[in-house]
Image (cartoon, rainbow, N blue to C red; front, side, top):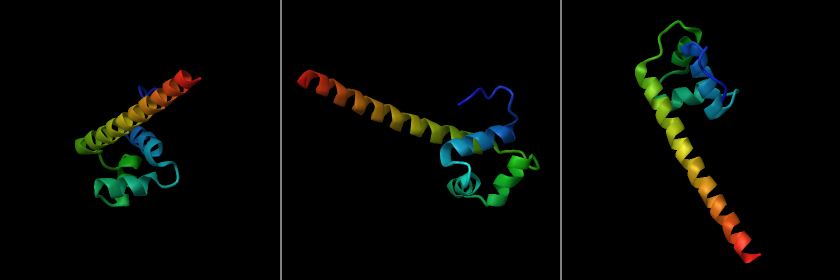
Length: 88
């Protein structure tokens, strides 16, 4: 993901939502995950309402969980490759 240094919170929310769920449905899926209406996401995205701190915490937890899954998958692939090299 490119640098987020120059992003306002609403832009960061959008970028993270797209990273997690894709461009087409990120607002709907994020709303469901957070237990809020899609309209709340739209209000945050437009800057109409401030994004609650708890939303940032939840997003951080989601990305941390994904990172752990990807690390485990990468380790499993590494082990598979190592075994394959030993057989050759």
